[in-house]
Image 1 (cartoon, helix red, strand yellow):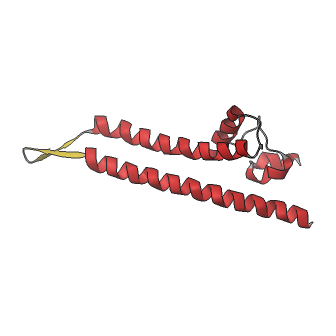
Image 2 (cartoon, rainbow, N blue to C red):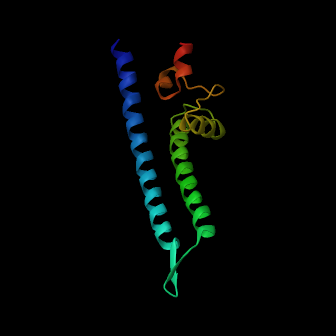
Image 3 (tube, one colour):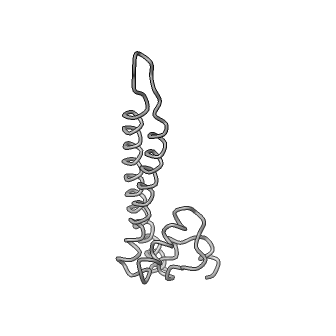
Length: 125
């Protein structure tokens, strides 16, 4: 029983660290979004504000997608570094599906790490 409890404590601590990194990256991304919006949203010409939406929206989306991709890569790197998943493609695939809360039915984590996976993995045990 102690070994089982430790396994979940280990998974909790790992998830806490990785989630903290994810939140940090996300907050940095939102800071970049704010600065980008502030820079490109309103220009003044002859006392009238001009909206540069054609520049603004693609830039905002690119910043947000970039932040999300970095967050996914952090989790994928963890899965790969500890040998939880066998290759980079599987690690990124699993990370993307978990990140988007779809869950992955093709790639599964080993039993020791199933607490980091989706609920369907728990039902298989």
